[in-house]
Image (tube, rainbow, N blue to C red; front, top):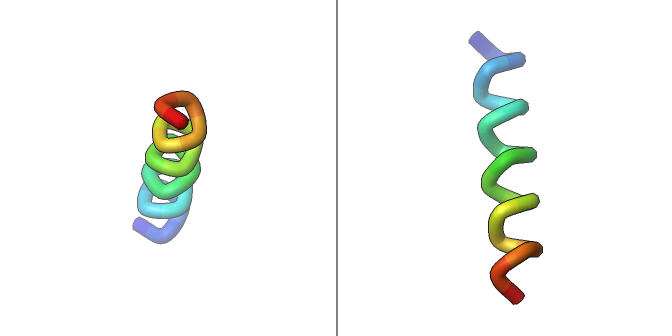
Length: 20
């Protein structure tokens, strides 16, 4: 499912942003 992968990517980006 493309939408699930897209949301997973957004979540990963948000998590990386928080760590910095």
